[in-house]
Length: 579
Ligand SMILES: Cc1ncc(C[n+]2csc(CCOP(=O)(O)OP(=O)(O)O)c2C)c(N)n1
Ligand SMILES: [Mg+2]
Image (cartoon, rainbow, N blue to C red; front, side, top):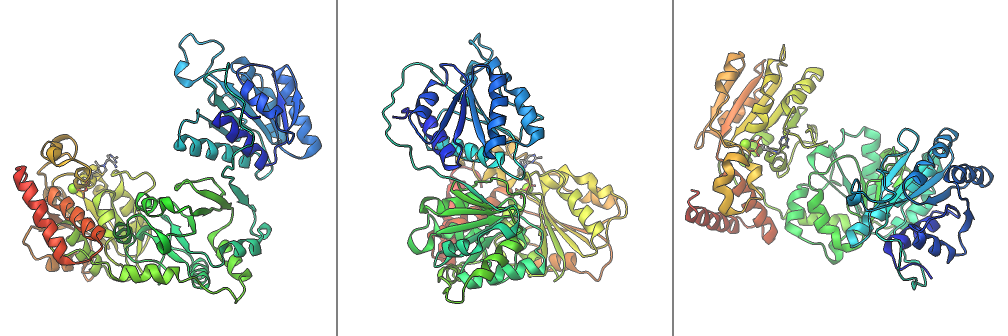
């Protein structure tokens, strides 16, 4: 019988699933629940070696003989340190050694606890992967430990092999029950081929055939034509559909228009709307949390395409990693798909839903000014959007397929957005439109002193007197107070600074002629940078976004409902003295 201890069960089930048979155990009671559970399973070949230095080198010998990974487990403190020399040897000899070290609970560190040192990172410099586990108390802990153990075991044998470390905090080394008759079914992550040639494409096609497939792509450079065509063909073959925000730079009918709007409108997916398989790649996704809400409960598999083969599990259902380029993956699958595969109706079904989504109305404010500009940006230009509300609002509007879109979405900073845009515009001979809020602008305003600003640089500065997006999660009764410290309310404008630099400037006030102002900004007949500062109110702006989202969530798409909601929100704000 196995220990009635979820972390022990998860560890053993995954070692077994990844084919790790040899386990070298050094004596100790801290890991007794593991030891006794290993003893209960004939799959494992157990070896007892007292000295942890010797145990490590002994395990290297096992890997030399079998060509397979070997695990070793010891107690905490100097025992764990004593694995170090064998770990260093394994690193340079490229041997798949899995060091599993017992530890005390992290909160006991430095608290006069017996046999406890800081074991995080003790093999740094000669280990491929270091995972810090935690006791499993709920589903989130279980997902986390499952992912980290999978990640370590995948890394041990990847591209030439090497040592990995899993540090296991154990609360108590006495008691415990051993009445679990079988290991649980656990999620096993597989990594397919470091080279496209090694992937069994037919097996991949068999798993995809007849399935509802959603391709969810994150921020990426515009795909080359080979990749773009391969994705389009893949979507057509399987009836798949692509959900990606503007920053993914994917164009074509297979990409859903207005993904954020669709996700808001759908709510948690049921039945025919829920995907069977989600295929992902690229970087950050603006709507990751919304997408997780949509598909979270539907039990889908998540496959990740990543040339580096890294483990990223944003929806906690990762099952397969393809270490290939997107072009290799989509071409490989399509080449093996027989003509008898009928495309599933999934893509067409979601596209039909998108057709019913409304666009935001044209009331003055941040969202409508951004929409007006995006409608006028000339084909072949680029758009650089700053973090905060603008990047979310821009998502509500369609864009000409010739326009490339960028944003510093790697870590979502409001710093440096203007500098990045100017760097891009200088190196790239296309008109560059920057959409930026006031806080992001003033943060990085000295970027405008960069010499020789590009002639095609056009900046829409949406000045709503603070950080509108900061108000989105605030409760109504705090909104009034939140202005000072949460959203850094101010009444600064940029005119003086911009004109002092000799850059052309115009302003757009509420009630002003948006069409004329936006036409001025996007007039490429003029050679030289321009800034349009559009003024609005940050609470109004965020209310418009909230109201629009609420309209979408009601699923009617009716402008009437939107107006009713706005009136309702207005009444509440007036009652609270905010308007
Ligand atoms: C360097 C950095 N500091 C703080 C934040 C937190 N933050 C995110 S959005 C935002 C407000 C931005 O306001 P603004 O540029 O005026 O855009 P708005 O939401 O008003 O359109 C802040 C402070 C951040 N992302 N990065
Ligand atoms: Mg602002």
